[in-house]
Length: 287
Ligand code: HEC
Ligand code: HEC
Ligand code: HEC
Ligand code: HEC
Ligand code: HEC
Ligand code: HEC
Ligand code: HEC
Ligand code: HEC
Ligand code: HEC
Ligand code: HEC
Ligand code: HEC
Ligand code: HEC
Image 1 (tube, rainbow, N blue to C red):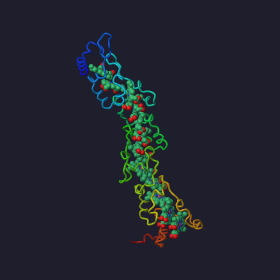
Image 2: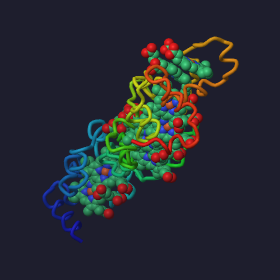
Image 3: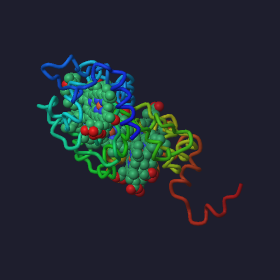
Image 4: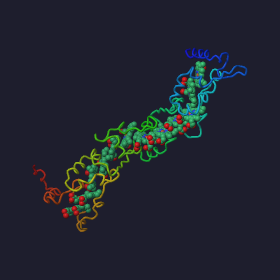
């Protein structure tokens, strides 16, 4: 009713329209009564405001009447199909354009439901390759579960706690890739502290040791890829006579483990105790 009143009022104002049966139809013998783009705002406020503010190409490349040809009651169906003007790309074959482009008057403002994947692939092809190449729990999530606003990159820490308090959201990418999160790799400047958040024992050993391994970084030995375990020989070659190594096949038989090497130089006796502790030796040792 209200709109009808406005309609009538506008008709009154637009005197030239009086007596014309249709807003757009121009009877051959009637005075000019063509509805122009500037008339729309007299009766409609929302659409012109939206177009003015965020119309994008729908403001600069087309006008109201390019999309709305005619007007009720003369022309009943004046809502255009997007396909009238958009065709030829896979993206334009999607169903229900307005599901994402919620308002045709603000076409670049896109709202995404949280379950969209297939539609994204009409423009982005790389990410799904990675997600499928190494299946993880991220593979089961929809693209828009993480990218809930188009173009927005979420922080890992929106959904996950860091491994330790001193780790920030920028650190995650050092070891993880968003679309392949279980393939853990890292650069050579990754600090021991980051590994220590999960490997307390290894880190403690290395902090305490007085041998030269103290200054070797975790990632120098466990290079590039998580769970890489080096052999001692990869760095030390053959440090002892072959005859000796033939009798003792494992370096650890004398040197213990890499994180906690025995010391031979400073106190031979202590080192020998450590390498082959006598039964009860530990118990008897008091400080
Ligand atoms: C004099 C007032 C008036 C003017 C000027 C006017 N309209 Fe309307 N418009 C209305 C009214 C009233 C309705 C509701 C009519 C109906 O639903 O039958 C309407 C409905 C519409 C609709 C909805 C149609 C539908 O099928 O849902 C569109 C789109 C529209 N107008 C576009 C325009 C455009 C574009 C212009 C400018 C070129 C314009 N109008 C100018 C009064 C006006
Ligand atoms: C690119 C095409 C396009 C342009 C340009 C366009 N519209 Fe629309 N308009 C639509 C579509 C599509 C709908 C139907 C939206 C829906 O179904 O939710 C619509 C709906 C409407 C409606 C009815 C629903 C509402 O939002 O009130 C009005 C009124 C309207 N448009 C007016 C205008 C006016 C005025 C202009 C110019 C300032 C304009 N439109 C420009 C495509 C367009
Ligand atoms: C009357 C023709 C016409 C209709 C109908 C139309 N568009 Fe457009 N649209 C254009 C033109 C022209 C452009 C600018 C050139 C291009 O990107 O193809 C455009 C651009 C766009 C853009 C990019 C906007 C920008 O600022 O870069 C989007 C998104 C869009 N249209 C979505 C839609 C949707 C969704 C519909 C249906 C609701 C629709 N269009 C209906 C003509 C139209
Ligand atoms: C699942 C959500 C979704 C659906 C459904 C969708 N779009 Fe889009 N559309 C987008 C996104 C996201 C963009 C990228 C916007 C950007 O470039 O920032 C886009 C961009 C566009 C563009 C501008 C860029 C280009 O490639 O031309 C046009 C035009 C467009 N869409 C038209 C349509 C039409 C027509 C339909 C229906 C056939 C449609 N869209 C359906 C999400 C969607
Ligand atoms: C019509 C094509 C189109 C569709 C559909 C589309 N995008 Fe985009 N997207 C683009 C364009 C164009 C850009 C900006 C250019 C670029 O960085 O690649 C972009 C950018 C992005 C970015 C930011 C990239 C960066 O480097 O910052 C993300 C994230 C993104 N899109 C995710 C999505 C998701 C998720 C979907 C599905 C919901 C989607 N896109 C649908 C065309 C599209
Ligand atoms: C678990 C959340 C998550 C899911 C699911 C997800 N992404 Fe991402 N995406 C991200 C994060 C985080 C980044 C930032 C990565 C970076 O900066 O290294 C990103 C980056 C992007 C980029 C920017 C370019 C790039 O590859 O780094 C695009 C485009 C993108 N995602 C599209 C998609 C698409 C398409 C899908 C679905 C097939 C998808 N994403 C699924 C979280 C996700
Ligand atoms: C929008 C939320 C969201 C964002 C953003 C996000 N994730 Fe996830 N991630 C999840 C969910 C949900 C799971 C599955 C959890 C479960 O089932 O226990 C998951 C699982 C994981 C897993 C375990 C994968 C597996 O298969 O075991 C890793 C690793 C992971 N995320 C790392 C990251 C990293 C790194 C980032 C940033 C690049 C990130 N996530 C961004 C939601 C998210
Ligand atoms: C120093 C490397 C490193 C950094 C930095 C790192 N991660 Fe991890 N992350 C790992 C490793 C290794 C795993 C365990 C993989 C396995 O179980 O095999 C893991 C596992 C995960 C998991 C799976 C669940 C769990 O806790 O085991 C999530 C989620 C995760 N990381 C999120 C993050 C987030 C968020 C950040 C940034 C705040 C981050 N990661 C930073 C190496 C790292
Ligand atoms: C999020 C926790 C987490 C982080 C951070 C982490 N790891 Fe691990 N790491 C694990 C888990 C879980 C295992 C598997 C333990 C098992 O199988 O008993 C593991 C196993 C290992 C193994 C043993 C592989 C084997 O075959 O026994 C090495 C070596 C290792 N990690 C090195 C590192 C290094 C170096 C870093 C730092 C760059 C690091 N880790 C960071 C969780 C983590
Ligand atoms: C990634 C290379 C690397 C690996 C793997 C490695 N080391 Fe070392 N090691 C070093 C470096 C570097 C030094 C210090 C050399 C120097 O400063 O002269 C060192 C020193 C030593 C020393 C002398 C310690 C001291 O304080 O004088 C011994 C003994 C040793 N390594 C044994 C081992 C054993 C046993 C393993 C296997 C369990 C091993 N290393 C694995 C790099 C490595
Ligand atoms: C000098 C080389 C070297 C350094 C430095 C080093 N590791 Fe190791 N690590 C090894 C070797 C070699 C093994 C296999 C066991 C052995 O023979 O000592 C190993 C075994 C492991 C294992 C599996 C067995 C276990 O003890 O749980 C983990 C986890 C591990 N290292 C984590 C770390 C972390 C975390 C750091 C840094 C705090 C680190 N390593 C520093 C060489 C090193
Ligand atoms: C039978 C016991 C024994 C075995 C087995 C053994 N070592 Fe040693 N290694 C020693 C002793 C004792 C020293 C100290 C010699 C010295 O101080 O001059 C030593 C010294 C070293 C040094 C330090 C050399 C230097 O110049 O500082 C390295 C490195 C080393 N061993 C690596 C290894 C590696 C790698 C293996 C396995 C392939 C291994 N050792 C096996 C007993 C052993």
